[in-house]
Length: 496
Image (tube, one colour):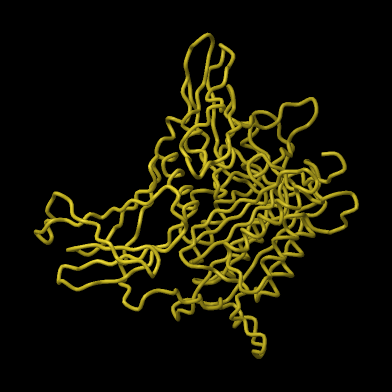
């Protein structure tokens, strides 16, 4: 973009925070490694990566981390720094790794580039892999050290640092690929979505020493009482709004595999408490207790919401054998029985209670109160089950899209070659963005979908285009979806 400084690749902020809740078998200190690379020798230099790393280091110190800082790391220096970091991490520690610099994706794997990475060209992908640091390997190292929760932060602009005029570039992607298959206890956030560029600054008058993402993320990270998901959501909103002011699209995305809420600067950090040594500050503040009925069982009922043309089907899963099920909306209505199925429950030898109810298509957000009679005749509950129509619709349609990925596109020869995408239209409420690539493994064209209609979400508007005309020589079409929760699908390829 003219007059805008866009980071040529990623300040790939890679942050791992392994959080722990006061268990004596674990250590409870916080350690961090912060790396910033500006001075690349054979690919374009960066301007703000070192500043981003320094700012992140200062913020982490303020949150009680013991911080190691390294700048402009060669391949050898990178390895030695990681070894020193490994030695500092113990079982149960909170570990935070941050990398600002060039990153590169090859065949779905992310590589962090040291300052002496060679200038590779077409066919030299192996050269890049050998000279760089595999991001997944850093996750594995922390897992092997017993790190319990990992936070990965990528400030990536997704340009190709190996592109040069008059040459064919290395086959791969600029920036980093979404890490959607992380192990349990890992959290990752990216400064921009697929094929979006991350802004260094908003204009020539923007004198902030940090990139738009890092300056925002650090501020949200330091906000008391915010868990990691809230930090990510607020960062995404602020960054996207800032980018829109200069007509640029940058929407950070995150992937959450945490079991519990994680707070790095929780409200429990008492303002009037006496200062304690750094190692004592490593313990995370306690998680706020859940609000739940006093008689809630460990295996409380759960609900699955499914949207159809006539409204909502809600199916309850109850671990205990039941003799009857009743429900109501909110706390004031009368309980209604769900009735029975024409089948016997082998556990009770009685008719099986109907585990499903129906809700109107325009049912508002509410709390369903569910109770049941167990096999001993005792009434259990009521148990609150939150019904959020929009969230339930997105979750349901996302599940359907995952299950029917082979049907996203279909070809038809009719007065030329047509490719239909009716499946994507029918479940578009779960899709933020759809892209396709024609005879390309890289989806680079935006597929325009009509907006979601909550009143009739699966209907296809009469004016909507359900197909595209393609050249008769087309052999394949690739598809990639960005979902409403920010996650990104695998690239699916459809051949004629």
